[in-house]
Length: 94
Image (cartoon, rainbow, N blue to C red; front, side, top):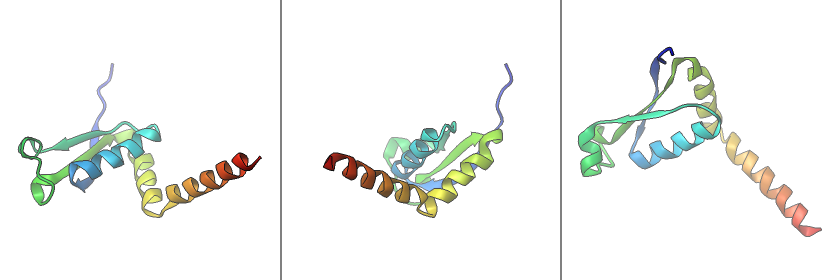
């Protein structure tokens, strides 16, 4: 078995935001590993340099992960959610 080379995709401020982004990436089929200073987890820092969380992805998934983040920042996922909500509302009317 070959070992994957993990690279830093982005650095997120705060563990909660990092977990949200991790969930988004995993929902798109991308493997993610969060990496944070140990003391930050112990004391629960949510601001400053110790609150930073690096999101690591396999090198071969980096471009796909960057695309997901760009789409997220552009609001693509919100638009898709709005479309699904509208479709669900229409189907409930019948």
